[in-house]
Every structure is written in C-alpha cells, then in structure tokens.
Image (cartoon, rainbow, N blue to C red):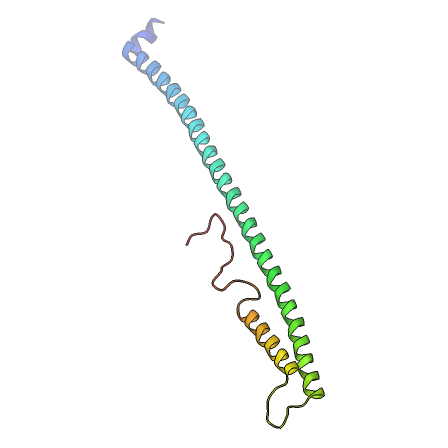
Length: 144
C-alpha cells in the first residue's frame, strides 16, 4: 500500500473523489431538471387541450346556429314558393275568367290578386319575415 501512496499523491486521490461526487451531483441535478421540464411540458399540453376543447365547443355552437339559419331559410323558401305558385295560379285563373275590360281598369278580384302578389314580393324582398337589417346571431368567440 505504501507504493500506491507514494505513486498517487493525496491531492489526486481527493480530486478523483471530488470529481466522482461532482459527477453524481451533476447527474442527479440533470434528472431533477428533466423532471421539472417534463412537468412544464405536461402543464402546457393540458392548457392546449383545454383551449382546443373550448374551440371545438365554439365550433359546435356555430355549426348549430348555421344549421338553424339554413333550416329557417329552407322553410321560408318553401313557404314563399308555395305562396307564389298559388298567387300565380290565381292570377291566371282571374285572367281567364275575367279578361281585362276595354278601358283597362282591373276589377276588384284582379286588384286583390295584384295586392297579394305585391305583398308576397315585398315579404320575399324583406327576407321572408326577417326584419330588415337583422343578422344571424353571433357566437361567443366571434370578433367584430
């Protein structure tokens, strides 16, 4: 043992011990920091998942609004089509049954048919019962 002590000085022995201790400390610190980084990444992933779920809920709400508006449009269009076909049929029947008089003054029946046609056209122009200037309902995530 004396030869070993003579070949390797004490400061080298303690230097090796210090280097091993520092290496162990460095590795332990790296593991601890890796765990902290993993926790931060997990928190960020949770935040992104929550935001994505909120965006998906907003998308579902907007799709529901669009679906309701489209259904309202189809219903109003169908009502207008049936009303216009009935008015057209009435106008044709009135023209066949009572042709225009020579002095070109429409009779009461023809005047009622014209007024009904004008009212239907005005309703169609106004948006089939929708008030002029109104818009689709918004959704919480919309920006103006």
